[in-house]
Amino acid sequence: MSNVQIDTQHRRRFRKEKLLDLMSRWTFMFPAGFILIAMLAYPIVYTIDISFALIDLTTFRVAEWVGWDNYTYVLGDSRFWASLKVTAIYLALSLPIQMILGFGIAYLINVEWKGRGFVRALFLIPMVVAPVVAGGVWRMMLDPLYGLTNYLLGFVGLGPYDWLGDTWLAMWTIVIIDTWRWTPFIVLIATASILNLSKDIFEAASIDGANWWTKLWSISIPLLLPMIAATFIVRWLGAVKMFDIALSATGGGPGASTQVINLFIYEEAFRSLYFAEAAAMAVLVLVGTMMLTGVFLYGSRKLEDLY
Amino acid sequence: MSTNPSTSAVLMRRLHVGQNVRILAGVIVALMFLLPVFWMVLTSFKFQRDIFTTPPTFLFTPTLENYTRYLQQSNIPYQMMNTVIVAFGAGLISIFTGSMAGYALARLRIRGAGFLGVLILMSRGVPPIALAVPMFLVGRSLGLIDKHIYLILAYCTFLIPYVMWLMRGFFLALPKELEESAMIDGCSRLGAFFKIIVPISLPGLLSTLIFCVILAWEELLFAIVLTNRIATTVPVAIANIAGDTVNGANWGALTAVGTMTVVPVVIFALLVQKWLIQGLADGATKG
Image 1 (cartoon, rainbow over the protein chains, first blue to last red):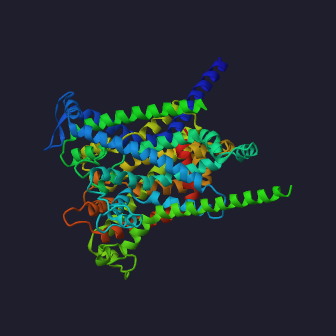
Image 2 (cartoon, each protein chain N blue to C red):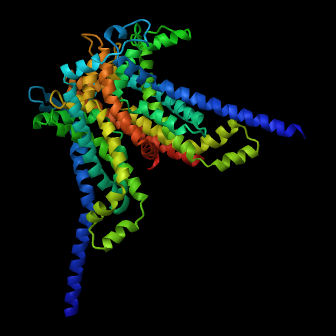
Image 3 (cartoon, each protein chain N blue to C red):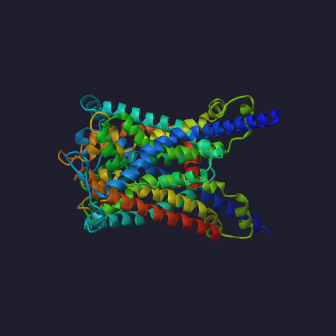
């Protein structure tokens, strides 16, 4: 009898302790979880919500629900497609250039000498220049009349170019600024990962008579492939959000030739006050980004399996 | 027989020369990347008449005019203050909440931790504009627009996942015995975390904090959307100066304000460069 009592008492205490334990575990998640639900999850739900609505601009509240109207409007809007195309061109140009330059420079400067740490530190500087400052300063440097770039290019017999006035060159302007700011980031990651490669393999290869080209193609690149894929995905996630450089360097112009999708949605929402249409576009971009990210992640896994 | 040593000497010398060429090329590339920053700082010390010259000039009488004018006659000092408040506020909140959550992910065997990890990664794919529109509408109806705290919380949306991820990796590398012995001594989980784990993780936490402050310091989109006068930050001011199509570009102002925002960040970054580089590499791979 008393035995059973003690047993249930034990069990109750045990259960209570287990509950307390569970609570103490979740206490750690609570503050971050609360902020992320309130400021991240809720706004996403809200965006999806108002993408089906008509917003009354006198109250900034939902006036009526219009179903898929915003989506059909957006999908029929040629400016939306044009800005998606601009974004695609920007990504297709800048991501490969930055990856190749970044890993190339890292490979180049991976020489053992006293100043290596110093040179790496120098690469840190462009990375922490605020994108909006980068855009503004580059805009100044690329000025056709007073800019430094055309002046320097003149020494090697190039130019003068109308960097900000020509639609195609303006795209290159954005790509150049973005590349300037982000290549150092890739250089730093690449240097760290190249340093992590085991030296023994290279020594063994040298003994076997491999030249540097074989070493690069048959050893370095396959070994670095997971890192290259991971860096690409991080860079993709950053580049797809690009907004500030375009805003401060070209303002999306000339015309809409450098109006990346984020800038277009921003203008639609906060200049034209088409909040619902902007929300619909944001949802489409969100879904598209997620899907492409999934594809890239899947691809990088496959790539890793391959080697 | 006698040719052997000499060829190897030639080989060695060629290798040495090759190395020097690579070092030189590396330094040149690094300096090329620094040129825009150098040009910005240089221009900020020029009089208006030296800025607009063809060809651009490297020799001029330096002046502090651009700085003094902007520090005295505009809202820049006030906006600097805002930027400091918002960047450090967001950094501190994110470090506090994010490191706790990162610890939970690393150590506390929470059910669904793997799923949470995937969610954190996914959150990095959310375009900020998809958050800015609802934040603006909700903030407007709640009267939160132009309040520092609202901008701080908005920055937490991208900083907390970052901190969680970085600190999770950091905590995973710590030996488990640390908090186990503390808990045997009668510490609660929270007690063990704050008394044992936080003190020994201080270097990592501090560097991650600096990382967060830098990211918040440069942010433009949320700042443009969620503030309009009282809580405006410097990036917004710079965007306005750079995009001023009415008066034309005020390059003196642009470069002076740009230099003032960039210099503190560069100093910060160089102070923690070792961790910053490691953090970048970890942030890219671990997952």
